[in-house]
Length: 248
Image (tube, rainbow, N blue to C red):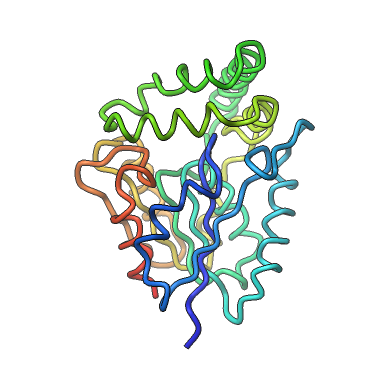
């Protein structure tokens, strides 16, 4: 029997390499993890404006390139989870299971979305003025990362510091939660089995995970990783691998 294919999407400021420690913990006889760069990151860094449909076109091409005999597991972390959910809603026949890690269906409410767009525009302008190194330090001071182990925070800082500032700025402006439509209302139309994973310290995303499970069209699984925060790919790769391994 051929290994099950996993298409894996990283978070903001990361790259396909963000999944390396998870991939190392998966049984290669059972799984083939294929991590890709999202538009604006790594090999797909782009200085032009980025829109959701650009990313979905990239990911459809990635699905084609996998040449998988069966539908694939689609896994996305944070920003990658939002992109994965949009792709799964459009390509349901090609997805065997969707795994959302530390992620959300988006920011509901036009007032909240407008506020987030303004915030991300300010972040993008600051990034372009000050560069990736300084932005990595600024991003790492966000409350979202409080309690993460020093090694985890340093790994995240290093990835962002090495990124192309114009690519990241384009991502903030075009793929932020204020720019991409929220799809909470479409969860009831998702005919793909769903698993949501969140760290126990990441209380906001634990609450989001519970709401997603309640709204999912099909019975959904929820995995809460004890003692972990938002940066699950770096902090708890074994737990992420275990959640994926349970699907094969």
